[in-house]
Amino acid sequence: MKQFLLTLAAVLIGGFLALLGYDRFIVQPRQAEGGTGADAASAAQIDMGKARAEAREVAAEVEASVQRSVDNARETMTAQANEMDRRELIADAVQRVTMFRVALTEYHMTNARWPQDAEEAGLPPPGDMRGGAVRAVTLGGQGVVTVALDERFGKDGAIVLRPSVNAATGQVDWACEVTGDDEIRRALP
Image (cartoon, rainbow, N blue to C red; front, side, top):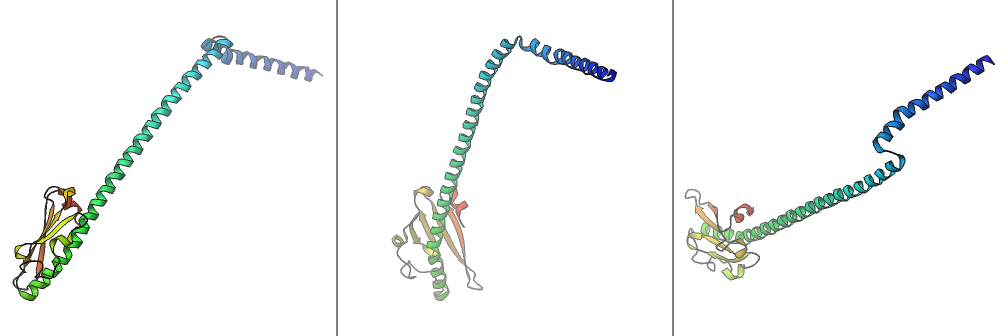
């Protein structure tokens, strides 16, 4: 029995010390910070209102940031689509003039001279080559082919192919020149 009383006394003293420590280190600092229990509850309400306002501000900032990102992505995609369209139009123009280049090379290798006009070389008239960004394909002196482009590529946008003949081999090489918009040069295949 003696041992039971000693154990009971020890448990009671330990519980009292735990409650005293809890009051001293937990309850009293909380009361010093927030006042009474009612004051702490109202402070918590004020903090909740402030937290809601801050959360709304953060959400608005995030939404604005996402919208800016979406707008930037949309602008970038539109610019890329326009660039691809322009490149496609230039590639189309180059394909149209390839027929001229091949026909003129064959004509020169066969006749050892350049034709006077497209008809002599068996090519369609300049107006028949119109389409896409191409206004006309014309044949000039010494086999020079000019592809006139529409206003999307500047006022005087054109691709000019100039042939040069290697006297020793008779091989025809073509040099490409661009006039008008610098974007034509960047878009050339």
